[in-house]
Picture 1 (cartoon, rainbow, N blue to C red):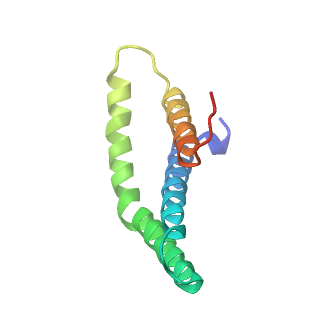
Picture 2: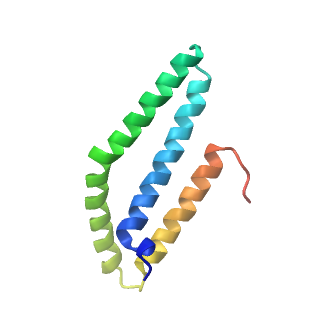
Length: 107
């Protein structure tokens, strides 16, 4: 299996994509703030630091334990559901989340 298809790499990329979607929502809200441009830039910088810091220090360990439990649940299902299929479904969900964030019709 290619290295980029390993379970840990797929989880990391899913988390990065989710943070990107949340960051875009924050930036859309910042654009509506009644702040001078320098204030909007500082607010955006602070939100990026906050989001990435949250991901790095809090969500990553939580996600690892949650994924481990989820992996155990998937393994316990009597139907043969490969882990890769679960990740494909997660990416499809993230795809529709991005379409919703940018208000783009994809279907």
